[in-house]
Length: 252
Ligand SMILES: [Zn+2]
Image (cartoon, rainbow, N blue to C red; front, side):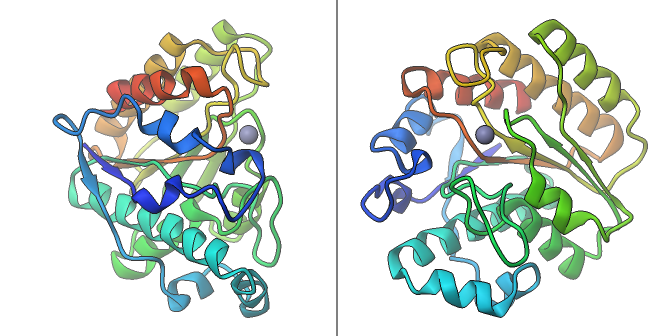
């Protein structure tokens, strides 16, 4: 498995939102073992790639803040690289910011800018002619932008698990994953804000490992092992690194 990452994501200077908290990306990467998981550094997404998903006027409005634009294009480029790696046979976790699952065609909210996951799927749809995708979004918040952007693609399924407690959450994830028939790729919006000490007050570190392993297993069965994940939320910095690593260990 690879980790798609760029040291530029450590730069917290351009924005003061929670996804740009100083030290957040350092925390997310802190337990990623470079000896175990090699880093995939990719080019920023091109304007042509962004236009597959976003309106030109929206892209221009983001470009008005050059540093934000640069990092958002890097996040999207890393997500695309993660999907390409996954499609070629090596799973990948894109440890990126800004996140993307609240980004629509012409607007965004919730610290998101471009929809990294949808950009990656649309790239595969165009270059590899994939027919289908199963998206599981484990962030505490619904990936409304992702739902909106994939609504017109009948081959895409988006699953946002919701349950009151961890036990039922895991049961729900397990049963829904078991229903997947053949699919070209499985993509994960990996948010860690449903963590027991984060705003969701629900999932433990072990649960993130379990979810990663469940998705891996579903992917081996239904998508030829093709799977990638992209970082979304996750704001409890003391444990973000161990939660990311736990997910990756299960997902690998
Ligand atoms: Zn969230």
